[in-house]
Image 1: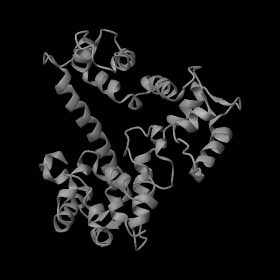
Image 2: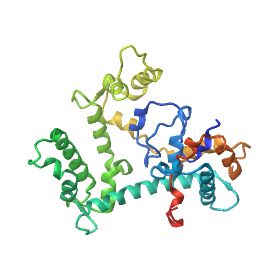
Image 3: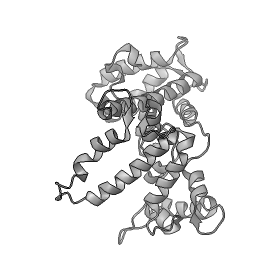
Image 4: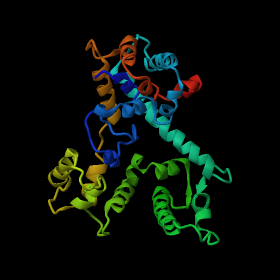
Length: 313
């Protein structure tokens, strides 16, 4: 694969439909599909982090290479001139943690209205929904949908609020925003997944609903091969008890796949694709050689990681 280091700052291994994003990979490496046949945006975001991967397209190829070189130097913590699997694994996990922390910090400033270092449910509710639920604004067409969203948010907030005092600490607010990160919140992830896909309201997911969440048939358009594959996965793997439905336990097995270390898998994938001399590690020249083969539009999705100070890394 020649487009790869693009990958290095970003990716994973086989083609899956976009809706497989429902599978929660702990701290998500990327919202993009990990399908190298169609690009390396997943790899970019896994390597740099989601936010940083958005603005690198403003750089020239020369600036991109220079900044990438600085990133590689940061990853090479033992300063031996190579990026090992352990160093790359550590870096990707670091970027995952940074994404969650930055996301929580951004929302924390918005919702902690009284600046007391905590967020009460009333603060969150009023900030998020106050305008939309005000009876004075009867012209808002989506009032009922906002009410449904409010109910769902309140349920999630209460689940995250371990001591039940109606006030979220930083950790509890993190659990509210990123429930897939916390074991005690996994039932919420499962419940919300079922609610999203279960169109007939029977509390479980049938094959039609499962496929319908991923694919909408268009007249005259041939069904993609992956749809047939997903139908097979539903009957052979997802529907464990073979009753034709996915219940809560089966949905949990689908969207919360255990203790898989996706950062580790990504590190292995990137080394496999970039390690031209097969010594199990990456030199800066191997990384740069791959870069030279990548289109500018692809290279430059890296992000603005190095526009920040040293401490930000």
